[in-house]
Image (cartoon, rainbow, N blue to C red):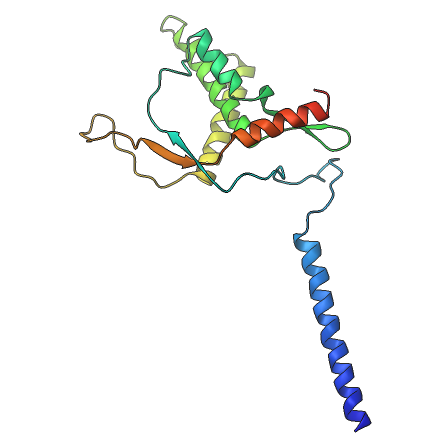
Length: 190
């Protein structure tokens, strides 16, 4: 009987060890860890909490964000929140958020388009340095679109549609990101 109790106790101890080991393993896998932000030691995603509730965004052609006006340039600039830079870790290491990187690339492509268009119809290419940035932006935007696109159906322009594009779409509330960028820059004195 004592031997049977010892076996049961040993089995319970073994099962408790497995459970404790499993909990510790899960905690190391899913509990946020501390990063140094030196070299490759940083999180892949900026760990801020976006609200679960989404907001309605109007989807339509707009007169805003024009390529060839001062107001349009100011609107593009404002959409990047401090040029889209955040500073993380004790050393305030600079990073760009992909959302702002994408907006910056769209702005770069728009400026390149205006530059080519303003050359009185000539087909000269932008400078080599500008061309490298344009190539980078085209490739980066292509990758982001493949990674984050949706399968919504868009009507073809000029094809009879009763309402054209849908009036609105549900999107994350990015105002939280803009607020966090401001707080981040204040923390690092930027």
